[in-house]
Image 1 (cartoon, helix red, strand yellow):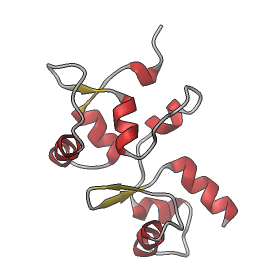
Image 2: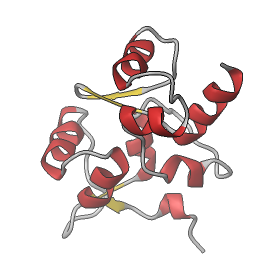
Image 3: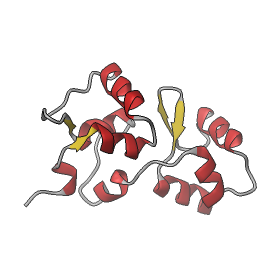
Image 4: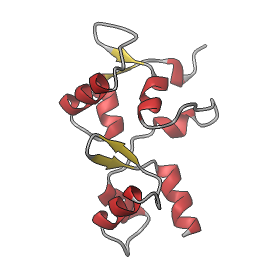
Length: 121
């Protein structure tokens, strides 16, 4: 039996996860020299996707959380920080005051990180 994190994902799935277009996702994967583990269609390992996001290792217990789609700044504001603007969210991420993932020029955020940040202020 396979864990869901062991099943490779397509570029379309990775694009949905990143909340980016497929063309942008392909460019990110190529720029990071991430190679597909399967062809026809091209599929990528979750571990490589997470490494691109800055997570060197994801335990089996956290795999499901790390497979959830990342959040755009506007969604972070709507769900967790209604008193802030999306620009403030990205500014805080740039300064390291909020955990974020820089994908090219786009900031994305993990739901679990935003829940924790909202609780801890």
